[in-house]
Image (cartoon, rainbow, N blue to C red; front, side):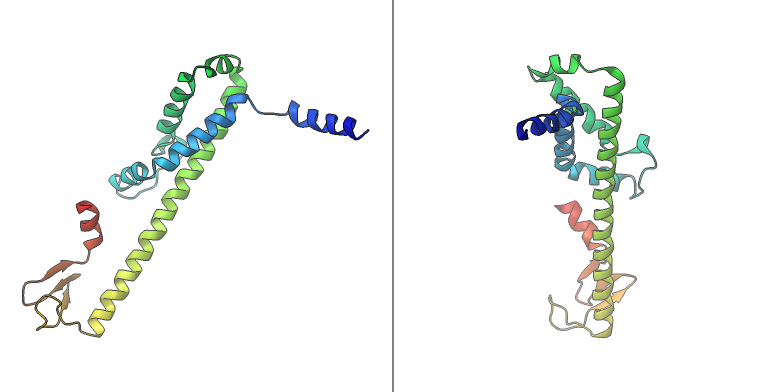
Amino acid sequence: MAEQSKSSHHLLYKAVSSPPWKEAFRQGCLERMKNSRDRLLSKYRQTGGSMPRGAQNTFLVQEVMEEEWDALQSVNSCPEALAQVEEPVDLAVLEEIQQELIDREQSIIREYEKSLQFDEQCLSIMLAEWEANPLICPVCTRYNLRITSGVVKCPCGLYIPSHACDTWALIL
């Protein structure tokens, strides 16, 4: 009796299972998206930090899906499995995976924006602290540092723009 219920339980989930390639494709796409984080953020920065609207204007989703689909098809055992997929089911599965990737991409961008906001807040606090409590210049140790138009200056010639984070990102 226990075996019969186990068998019917197993068949219940077996009948509803997803296509064999779906999980491999989904995992591959998610891994590619994770590994393409730098490329995603670079594209995001190039657009001036504006998030795209809608699925057609995503930064990397289509690219990641195409790369993974090509990789999946190039595996020796997969073309047979892919050939057995019915087109309507295939489209629904791909749309589901695409939406999951879009959500992941937007999550990465939101995380990056939160990090930027935190960095800006820290920089503002530091600049306000410097204005309230003058710091002695670490180069000449003679004059106090001054902040003028968002630039840290010293009469000795030290000049640090407040967008130093962007400068360091370009240098690195």
